[in-house]
Each structure stands twice: as structure tokens, then as C-alpha cells.
Length: 239
Image (cartoon, rainbow, N blue to C red; front, side):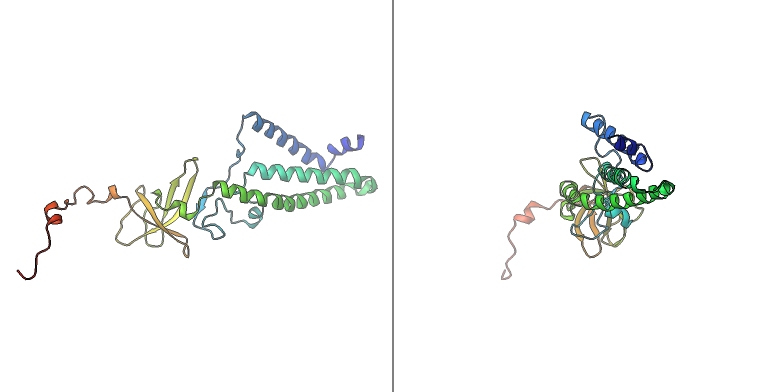
């Protein structure tokens, strides 16, 4: 027991012990309702910019190392807590069971090797553990392209062409989605205008947008159809 306590506060376990204490305190605050689970939220959801099983991948990070940890798909606090816990277990095991067999003069070298090994094991293990969690969170929160059809977006780029433009969709949970959008040549948009999503081009990852009906210049000024002309029967050709 004394060896375990000594190992907790010895290098390199002490590094993870401090982080582990902070993680435990954080989750106690989560249980008490003082802080949110996703306190360290990272990244906007860039929908339609990446391919994959879904039409949109929320928070996909271009860095492969972070993608392996599902950063942006799983709350960062969960990822960090798992990483710290696994690294702490690895360092503690090395300090408790391996250190007694290492000569005193080489302990510092072994400590650095144990730290590096624990970080690598924690990284790989965390990536494996959070993989099913990423699927769970994506099924719960991630919108697909079909869900965005008919939604209203606000344009964030100065101009919109047939292949280029950006727009923002405000979700009910308070998160913003940044979309790659395009429009027909005869439509004219500027930054700040609102539009409606009509369809999604899977090949290009672009959402096709159109003006809202009440924003068309002729929406209120277009002449109404004459009921008499609508109800009148067509003229006979033999008359």
C-alpha cells in the first residue's frame, strides 16, 4: 500500500495524478449541475464539406491525430478524462511493478520512457473507446443533408455563385452550422440575406439555395390572376 501511495506522487505518475484530481473535481461539478458536460466545446459543425457515411460530419477536424480521438464529435471533456485516466493507470502500474526492478541510476530514464509509453497507450486506447461514443453522439445530434432541406439559412459570404458561397443555419440547441452553398445564376444574394435550402449536391458537397418567397422583389407587386379569365371556358375554334 505504501508503494502505491509513493508511486502516486512520484515522477511520472504525479503528472497524471494532478490531472486526474482535476478530472474528478470536474465530474463532481457536473454531477452537482454546476458545469456542463461539454464545457470545452471545440469547433463549429461544417456541414456538407466532408464526405463519409453521413451527408454531414459535425466538427470533423482536418488533423488526423485529433480525428482519431473523435475531437468535435465527442465532448472534449470525455476524451480528456479518458486519456488522463488511462495514462494515470499506465504510469501507476509502471511505477508500482516495474520501478523496483530498475537500477537507481537509470530511474530517470525509465521515468521518461514510462511517461511516453503511457501517453501512447492512453492515446490509442482513448481513440478505441470513444469510437462507439462518436456514433452515439452523431445519431443524437448530427443533422444530415436531408434534415436541412427546406431550412432557412443566413448568408455569410459577400457573394453567392453557382459553386461558391457560405451560409449559417441556427439550430435549436444554440449551435451554428456553416454550409457550403450555391444558387442559380439568375438569383442575386448579398451577405445578410436569408434563403431556403432546396437540395443537396452530394458530388460537390454544395447546398442549392433559393430566395424566400417573401424576399422576391415581385412577391407583393405581382398582379393577381383575374378570376374571370380562370373560370372562362376556352374559345371554340369552329366559331
